[in-house]
Amino acid sequence: MNEHCETSNPHPYEKSSWFSKIHHSWLFNIFKIRHKRSLESSDLYDLLSDFETSTLTNLFENAWNDEIQLSRAKNRLPSLFFTTIRTFQKSYLLIALLLISFECIRIGQPLILAYVLNYFKQCTTISHSQAWLTALLLCLLSWFSVTLRHAFYYHSLLLSQKIRICHMGLIFRKILRLHTSSFSSVSSGKMINLITNDVSKIEEFSTNIYYLLCGPIQAVFSLWLLWRRIGNTMFVIMIFFIVYIIIQMIFAKLIQQIW
Image 1 (cartoon, rainbow, N blue to C red):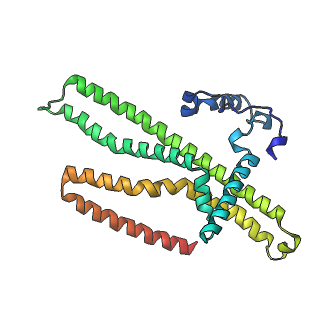
Image 2 (cartoon, rainbow, N blue to C red):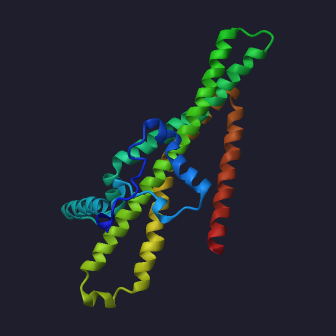
């Protein structure tokens, strides 16, 4: 579908510098246009080359065929989840590194801030130059934190859109290959629900899976830091958070039953 579209307004992201990509300054041009007048369809940028429907669907279809052959050899059912992970494993790894770096900075910022505040004590051993360097480091970490956070959400949303395109493209090709007699057992409502509901759930899962992996590591490291700072009082805090999580899970199930 995409190959028949004429290129009229190339996307600036593809030729922008790394600084522009990090700070999203490539969007300034369209903001200027909107400030002067209302946007028109010709003002919108062309689709990024990485989001071509045919390219992504071909890539995912080949991976799915390999998964079917592998499942037959191992006598198991083919897994759409593992097929998606293998297809975009480099992107998943990059986004996971962004989140881990962001969470490490979040944990380190209070420790560095505590070091800076110790400079203002009367009997401090921290020199004036050390305080300035530490304050500068704290400012740099704040900048890195904001940059990594935006980069994580941006790339995770882009990846989820790619996964959505792959799944919907594969479903579309499967529907086109179905025999006419097969449509009697498959209703149009099931197809619409598969595209609108099920695919969106996979897209949402691919955005939040990183917290499922990073959360336990962050919790263990944070508890270790608390134990180093306040000793056995940390266990009281841990019990409080466990009770809080259980209450949250109960309320989540109740809300799910209501809806």
